[in-house]
Amino acid sequence: MSKEKLIVALDVNNRAEAMSLVKELAGVTDFFKVGMELFYSEGVGIVREIAAAGAKVFLDLKLHDIPNTVGRAARVLVRSGASIINVHAAGGGAMMRAAGDSAREEAAKLGLPAPAVVAVTVLTSIDSNAFTREMGYTGAIEDRVRTWALLARESGLDGVVCSPREIKMVRKACGPDFKIITPGIRPAGSDLNDQRRVMTPGEAIKAGASQIVIGRPVTGAPDRCAAAAAILAELSGA
Ligand SMILES: O=C(O)c1cc(=O)[nH]c(=O)n1[C@@H]1O[C@H](COP(=O)(O)O)[C@@H](O)[C@H]1O
Image 1 (cartoon, rainbow, N blue to C red):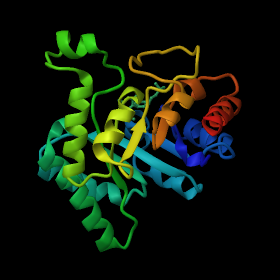
Image 2 (spheres, rainbow, N blue to C red):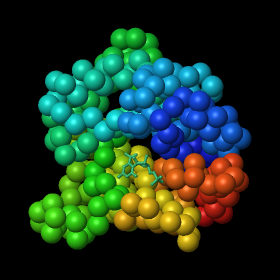
Image 3 (cartoon, helix red, strand yellow):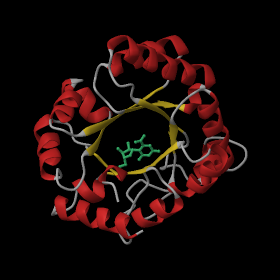
Image 4 (cartoon, rainbow, N blue to C red):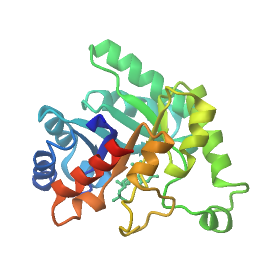
């Protein structure tokens, strides 16, 4: 099982803690997610520092704005050294196309590897009750995820972020090469926290996830390395 299947979310607000996690987990995973908290605290330097330490970075800023604004931001993020960047599918097809096209163009211009550009669909913290009653969406979450996944693919993006519950449906709709990155991962018996559409690491890989994203069950564990190693072992056994 490639350790790249496991992405650990560095949801911390300082480089010292982030880099100690990167070093501590080096033997178990070399793929880390930098989200808003760490990026707004430390800036693009933290992405470069993690990459310089030999690890890969999923830079999770969920770009969501008009096509011009997102396209220009995607160009800037190419220079960060991130291997994956994300946008929010709710921004529509023109925005997603602007993100993917701009990232590829800028990478070619700079002679850098283009990051994979994926679209976040329905957040894993949203359950069907919140989706329909509170947010006023009609239809099932799965239908919305399918629509946005197909739109992301049509817009030239590399994949989606969705919950493990939608993996099989997206795989069927978007084909074998489409990246399906799933947070909402909880080892059996662990606290859900604010996650609502979840699966265990083994279930998600068996369902066909390209990569899984996990944060608190690792970063909040007494022995973070052991927690990550146990997840990797579960992925290998799946
Ligand atoms: O885009 C993401 O990474 C993301 C999308 C989503 O739908 N759900 C979700 O949890 N995430 C991120 O994945 C990570 C999950 O963290 P834990 O709940 O601590 O495992 C967090 O950093 C979230 O920001």
